[in-house]
Length: 213
Image 1 (cartoon, rainbow, N blue to C red):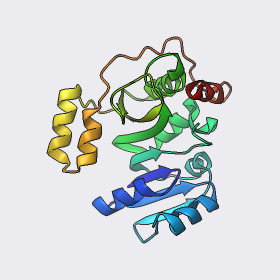
Image 2: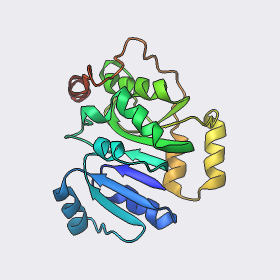
Image 3: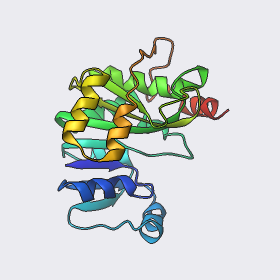
Image 4: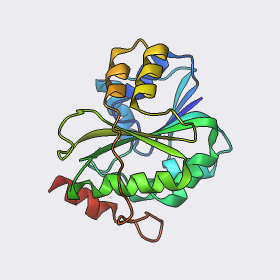
């Protein structure tokens, strides 16, 4: 079972739907986004892929379902809504995961340098709840530039870069998945000076603006 928080154009849930037999739920707060995905990006629902119009956090609070895979892919412009980045939210996410489940976070940020404060703060929040958080810059090159970054959080230890890329080669024949795995970021990220995002203190707007500056 998979849960997506944020629909966008619908490409990610559609791709998972085509490649697996998973039961997929997508939670999207804006019904106009759903209309755009259906009218312009060939997104459609069926018995295995359903959309719920709701705030992702409220949906979780009202649900007892558990998932193997949760994707957080929600934005206001390119900045995640603050209430979907906090320690309290991540703890709620984890409570809806099956053992060995994975949370995937889609983020737009540099990976290194002073403008990467948003990434570091979100990394710190997930490290607070999960044993392992893995980082995959999609460009895999200039880490100081703004780019799409995929992080995934889990209590499973997938080892170092060589271990992980070898595992993906064994389990997936999808070239895009293999390429992303090859971008495994294996440097230590120091988050000691960065904010632990909470419902009471969550400066993601400031950090996101810094990433864009």
